[in-house]
Image 1 (cartoon, rainbow, N blue to C red):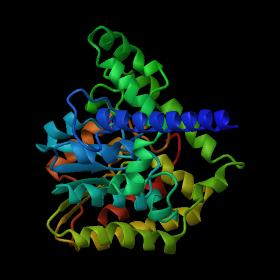
Image 2: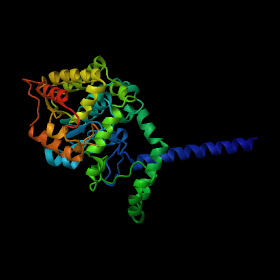
Image 3: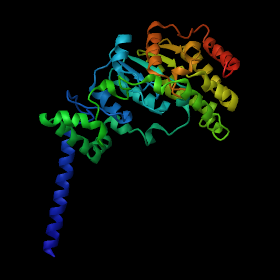
Length: 366
């Protein structure tokens, strides 16, 4: 009997040593750069996790926030075009609660300028940030719970071990080349490549009128059109705009905000017009609230790119009815620099009125 307890004790001790050893390895390697920057760091496309480390480890004065509509921008392009030192924090499918929380963390760590792609869907009702299952507030805040979840994560232990192996000179080249094809998260050697399209990407293949029209037919089909308004509720969306966006801006009067309404293709609004007019009314009414409120803030420059007919009516600029190509990304940076489409506080709904007129007049095929 004594022998059984001895073996059990040894097993327990060995388990504790293994767990602590794994935690020590994660702390020493720190693949997320949560504790210290690393000149040999690799990066992950899991931006909800990666952003927690970027905010702590990277130098920046400007942050770039948005959804999948802003995810393919490269930091080097933002820096060159706008003359800033940026940190891209865009998160696919993110809502205003998540975006505001991450922006708050970035501002606390030195951001003096925020460039914010703000589309209507981010204000749909969703979980409170403290209970959000997709974003760990404790990891960003580096609470005891957050640090423990990081250090004692089997996934992070695996990433740390792979990073350690990749630092061995004979293995560095082969493992770096193999990383994108292996089950590891931290595979990108350059921060500029986080969720960016390859530099040799065939734009015309993935962004063209054929794809845009196919997406339009899909979302307006009788079996799908009810989803156009899913999650849209005017009162809830206004509430989240006030709580998440307007209040964040008001709390930081010393931070400048360049907010832009992204250039959806005209077919996004035409789909609503034809298949879900109540949703279109919610979107335009919400926009009216947003432009009137934001143009009152002295630290906000609001830009509306949705009525630029030369872009939004050219269906070759899109991969579906909302996602625009990298060619349009480059245009957006130039427009932000020039202020060409900045909303005039004296007539804040002018671009919205123009958009409404375009949507009403548009006929597919003409």
